[in-house]
Length: 164
Image 1 (cartoon, rainbow, N blue to C red):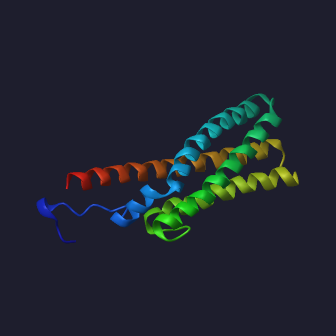
Image 2: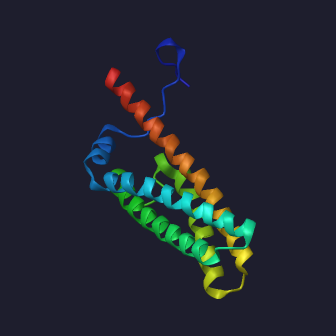
């Protein structure tokens, strides 16, 4: 690869100037900024209820309601996130800047949907349902970390551009 001044490789650019402008101007950025912490709060409450049920066999209904709410919030943030991605990058999903985050998001959605299937069909008992929810939550934490990393990268890119 060609070297930049000082021998450093050119940094990965998360946003072009035009994409950054669209990101900063769209209401969907604010929507994502509100939904992400809300989803995390719902996740924490639900995780506590799921773990409580698994440890004590008490609170199945509360845990179930919390998982359904978490899943609905997830679907909402995924739909609005796809709209955000379309506005900013011109694609509803799998824009190069967020490709792997979107791939992993599909796993998160699959596991949450699998939980709903297990709940609605009764083909998997309560403990199995909670285990599926925990798997979905583990995938969610990894996916959230991916997005937080990208948020950090975007801030660093913005700072570097401001200095330049």
